[in-house]
Image 1: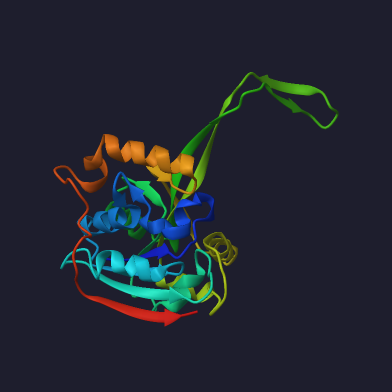
Image 2: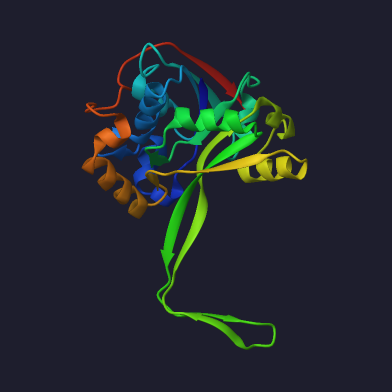
Length: 254
């Protein structure tokens, strides 16, 4: 199985930490988040990962000097300008099979291999991993009809939403809808696919999912990881595998 990890962002919301360190190398309880992700992918049976890099790319490549393990091949694709969450895919060779695409700024215990299996079984053009997020409203919520009459009043309700987890499985055919160059984001690509009649599936993550886009979110992710590393790295594992050298390739594009 193959995967693409989008690791080119600047992480502006995490400043000042990301002024010196690229966001994918921000440590979660001492381990760079990108190393955790690559360890998870290797343990899920992925054999090849393409890393799309941009901001401080040299630091990311130097952080592991090649591959995480002899069983995981890495290659690097350099963004000469920010290309969004889908634009970097235009730099890669055409997909040969269903391919996992994910952001490098999240912590999750999702079963990546199971997500790919579910996607293939659905015969969809794309599957989006979703996280259920609850929001507590501190005030009473009032609903009105068109004439201004109160139709509902809920005191401090908890609202529930499904948000994109930044993890996708894409079919090769979907990339025909991607512009050959320039910035393009995944929601626009998937909307375009739906408009052309393609089937887009959603898979709700049953376990844990954390965005690490802000210092507060990073702290929550670090606390969860610190409390149960085995949940994310596998039972019996004390550390990530990404610490050695191995085969790697580099491609520059933009």
